[in-house]
Image (cartoon, rainbow, N blue to C red; front, top):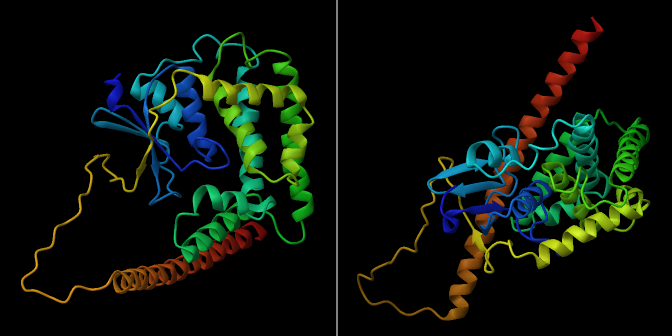
Length: 323
């Protein structure tokens, strides 16, 4: 492992009284807490929809979420963080429990965030710092992609929802029996599945509205609620929490370098009339507004073009199956 001061977990911003509102980011945060690895916390605002987030900076290296089966596997294999699964991954029910957490519950939470709750919670987690038009377009895009993934149409929407919620309900029941009155899923120590499921539970309980079907089903299991709340208390009181002054990370290069941009100084060639603060503010806001609208239009047209091509490709696939 690199020096502590060089360990930085970059995540999406905090919201809903959580250190980060993103389930994947939160699971990495919890895993590092369980592994007792001190680290700094930074919030990435420029590209909140990137699948590279969360990522972990250690020394001159970066481990991204979209590499090696996700951020937790990267932490174990590439970064050298202690493997919390070494003692429990050989247990008979490990594979089945991992499957229901990483598939059934992962799919159910994504569906609830983007479709079931009409994207309100997801927008706060992922897009609220972006210009409004861009955030709305990206949110619509994600919602539409999830519907395509699950094959949801206007005709079968109710049936598909019941299937998704039914699998989640079965998963909660199985996990409730597994946890019982214990503090962790397996044995007496935490694992990566605890980190993933605890992140899921925290987002369900705190980010989803009270009317959420998924939240209602989770609340049917008192021991799961206790299990999640105890984790939240431990995160607040634990001595291995990250640095007390998290920073906002506004840009990240694809190569993983961590150079910071600095304001450019401008020299004046000749004296000019000093603009009033009001004039400066109005001009600055005008530029931001025009730039945001221009970018939103370009993004919208690009995404719409891509979606039409995507739909046509799906139609061709369907026609091929018909033949």
